[in-house]
Image (tube, rainbow, N blue to C red; front, side, top):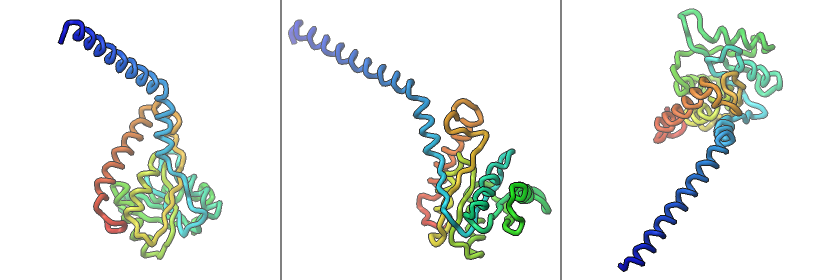
Length: 219
């Protein structure tokens, strides 16, 4: 190659590199400018709030927050006539007491009659184990449709786990309860919210791995 052609090729290579770097810089700037809308969309798309108009029972998942936001949402659904009963699923803390008693108190305090509360003490360590326990409970009670009530950040994973765990004969929908520790519009501004979001992402990956080869209802 002649010196002139070599210089032309080198010049073209430099121009191409500069153009590529310019596009990369513009892309990074756009990504930085749009980071908040992207993170907001990621959190909002993670929240599922689509309760059925009516179901046989509301399943109130355990370990509610300090303000009993899950119980508040369940009580709201009961008042709306979405279901005749609410199953309060809570971990045992002692042989004679546990979270169920707190859940019953929270529901009654929010206007749910005691006779509409079905307490279910369980020893689950995670969402999958709780879903298995609730599945057996619903099958034994001949419950055919449920509304799962849980915290907003937990709804998508909960729906996935319950759909994989419950038999196909039971219809499942999910209702989102607001949570003071997780605001989908500003979750990246608080350390606890960030941890909750990352924990849910990791939990979903684990759940997908656990269920990837298991047909529905065979856990």
